[in-house]
Amino acid sequence: MSIPQRAFIFDMDGTIVDNMAFHTKSWVAFFERRGHRIDPDAFFRATAGRQGHEIMRHYLGEHLTKEESALLDLEKESLYRELYAPHLATVRGFDQFVANAQSGGVALAVATAAPNDNIAFTLDGLDLRGHFRAVVGAADVARGKPNPDVFLLAAERSGALPANSIVFEDAPLGVEAARRAGMRAVALTTTLPADAFAEFDNVICIARDFSELDIEQLFAATPAATAI
Image 1 (cartoon, rainbow, N blue to C red):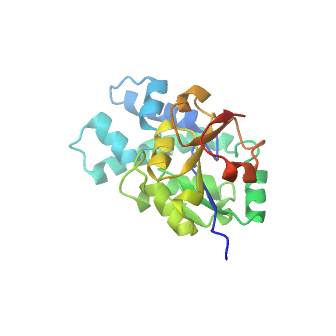
Image 2: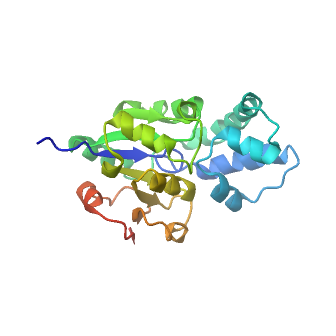
């Protein structure tokens, strides 16, 4: 009997790279130019994982078409890449963790709300794309997180069932999307403290980074989160 395919599915921003402060800073600057005052912490908690056009319509009006909000999003993302480019780097322990997972036959995927330009900026900028069997972004699904679509598609393209897939996330909306997809989650505290994930029944581990994560322990774990 063949062993079922296992998969690790990584959110990108705030998970592979510790960049959410730069995303939030660019959103705040973008909206302040348009007369909106944004609380950064509340904004992150409410929007992380949502697609750009969803955020644009929420703050600037539901009358915006997807095409109009996409054009505005280009302005915001250009500002983000300008701010973050000098700091582009993977989260501590990520590169070794990925190498160990590949050696163990674990399929790797990215599931992000980012547009294609930002995916290229991060994955190609760090020469990471070749590690992943699947890369799913905003262009591939109609709805952002907390809807489960992006994780379900990443698992399908990885050849793994949801029950055999573990999601790595830094945002509550992303952990909720994983829960709706029937997937366990590792919550990273790159952006929010551990208590932001205390209520989720699918979180198996809360960690600062990847440096102390054990692959086989994660797949054996059931939701009863412990902090590392």
